[in-house]
Length: 172
Image 1: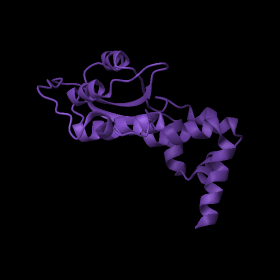
Image 2 (image 1 turned 90 degrees about the vertical axis):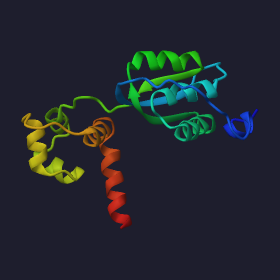
Image 3 (image 1 turned 45 degrees about the vertical axis):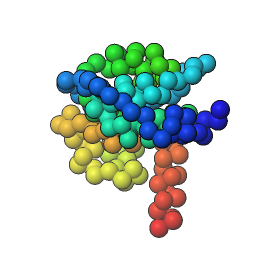
Image 4 (image 1 turned 90 degrees about the horizontal axis):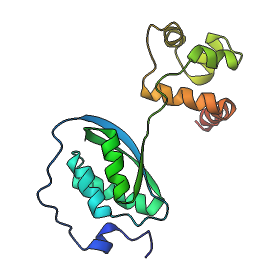
């Protein structure tokens, strides 16, 4: 069976799910899902597990179809009572799940110094406000999720990030 087949082709026009008891409370979590090695995923049960965490059935269907087509998917599950429990339940139906978050903390000053740049140079190269950079370095504020992602990319591949930004400017 081709992984390109949609859930609809595999399980009929409509898969009706009754009596899904949603978890009462929890916090949102971003997860990366992939098919476990040598596993045949039970996508209808995975859809139920995700729906119990307040993810709509349509969104669950789209995510699981993309998972089968592309091999992995990232999604935000709205209400997760316990991440370990959710990961375990998904493993039982043939899916590997892991939190998908940028690093919780980034030592911005160490990163900048490793690159041998002043605060002004670093801010200019990477499109940051120098005052924001100073606040991060002095602990007056912390980078948000998007900024932590960008800082992580800079830490891993600073030259490639600069080259990418240069190409983007040249294309305008």
